[in-house]
Image (cartoon, rainbow, N blue to C red; front, side, top):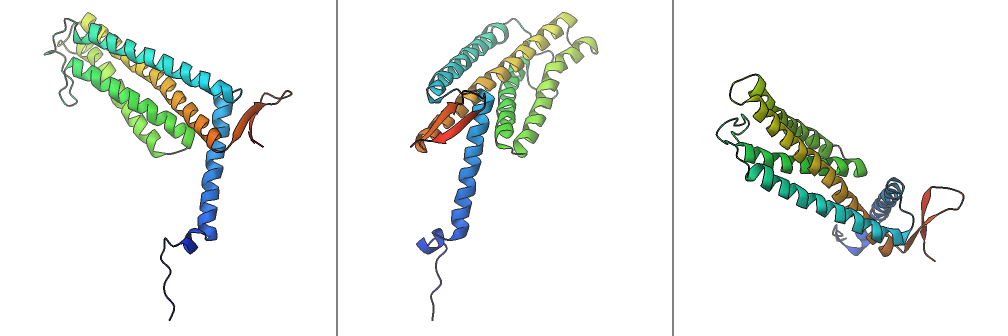
Length: 211
């Protein structure tokens, strides 16, 4: 009478199907690394360190600027938060600004993540978040020019501030995602002993395993 071999046994782990799955995963990571090298224009392995530092540096600057902008022009501003309350979840203007910051950041992160890895669902979520952010940014204009709840000048000023926050957080996400992807590329090349080089007769960057 033969005994059943457990699914997690060494014999099963060494089966061709498991080996093929690992090989496919390795190929996908290698292709991702090549795409990142071409898109981010990585010259060589040493350039990755400088690029990570630069991307994270500017990302940190943008985060600080956005926090200061919110504190000075929204949180500390002389706005009547009882007027122009959003019809979505009845949020006041400062709360709407926070929602735009969070949703704008997540939307950009999901969009960049989907672009690099080719996943569908993050892009769908990103698109929905963009619609919500756009609604929040335009809503004060409706209150100012369609209804009498806000003055036109106040409505324009609110929408302008929300637009600045939305654009700033989207631009900030671009730097943060690139910094993270460059860090992943650095770790991938180090773990697999891969050198990045640029041919003298071509601008296409390639991966080459170290001898």
